[in-house]
Length: 305
Image (tube, rainbow, N blue to C red):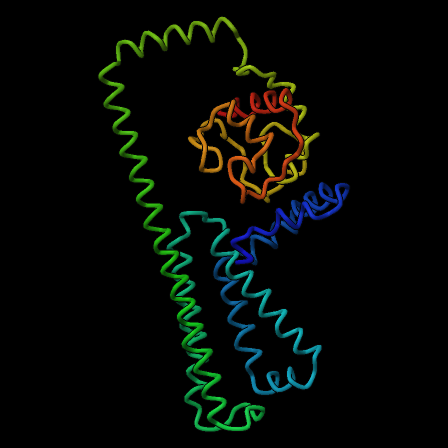
């Protein structure tokens, strides 16, 4: 749930205003970015998670956590860090939506080795952890670790499978829509061709980029002032090139904004002014963009074909 909430954007906006850009810039430094890419590789994250789980269940370390609050805190911190890293790599990794298959494979691998650990504890002939006091208590603990945790991981894998199938269906739907549009275009080809010739002649005579009721050049200058580059990579705009949000390269060629509303300059301007009006759960903050500035920024973004 923590990973699904995409906490990095909230963490960044929780910082003082003067610290946001420096922190976003620091995360883009080559050593930091390379390290983050390395540890969020699914294989690395899965191995780190497995090492943390198995290491802390060694009898000597497990007993030490019950004798020291500090060691106990380190144990649970490592569990939280390794598990968060594991799910972040699977959900927000470099593969994006194409990573469903990879994510399912690593979830099942994790379910297998964690279940094996629970089974070993359950079926151990002798007491491994004297703290339990009896073999029955130890077997009950192993059974809880084995079955309920395995069920949760299986549910997560099934959820990923449903998402994978849904993505395949959406892609198929897009292809069907494209084919339908192609057929309709062929029926009215003569009229469309004539309209395109007229539009091309008009665009050539203008000799400038489409601004769509806004000043694109001014919008490009406004983008750094509103701190947009702290979260997004925006072509042609200097800044820290943040990766909290998606890259806006070729944003004008996308069908929807945030997967919810039609991608038009007017809707981009409305989104910039109040993103929560379209999606109350959206983490993009209301930056107080004025209507005029929103039109200019939208004009520039709509030029990124």
